[in-house]
Length: 198
Image 1: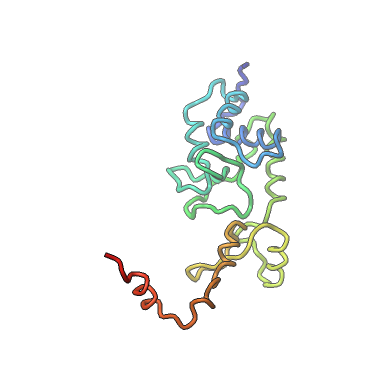
Image 2: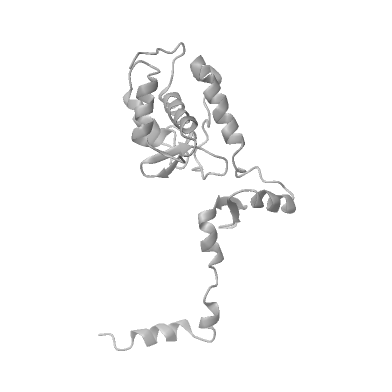
C-alpha cells in the first residue's frame, strides 16, 4: 500500500466520505457497507499516509445523520444498522440537532477525488424527496409521494414528514379488528380474562 499524501489537509470526515463513496461507486448493487469495510477502504485509499484513529469514530458516530451529535454534526452517512452505513439520501431521518455538512467542500477533498464528490452529489440529487422540500400544493405532494418509497406520517401535531415505507404497513393496520370489539367494554373483557387466575 503506497503512501498518497494529500495536497490539502484532509479531515477524518473527508476520509470516511471518500471511502464510502468509493465503495458505493464500485459496488452499485450494495445498499450498505459495514464500518469495517469503510475502514478497510479508507486504509486502501491511504489519503493521509496512515489510518488515523479518528476515522473509526467518524464512521461510527461523527458523520452519522441519524445519531445524536457527539459533538460533530456532519450528515454524510446514514446508519442502516448497528454496524452498517451508507451515504445519506434525501428523505432519510436526520437527528434534529444534526446541521452539518452532507458533502465535503471541494477545497477539502484531494483533487483526484473531485470526480467522486461530483458523482456522490449527483447520486444524492437523484434520490427521493427530502423532508422540508415537499411542494406546498397538496396534489403535488401526492404526486411526489407516488414517485418514491415514502408515505406521509403526521405525529404530535407536527407538519407531515416522509417516513420509510416499512412503516406504511403499521399505519395501514390502524383499526384492524375494531369491528370484532364493537359493543364490548374493555374493562369487562379484561376482568373475564382474569377470572380463575390465582
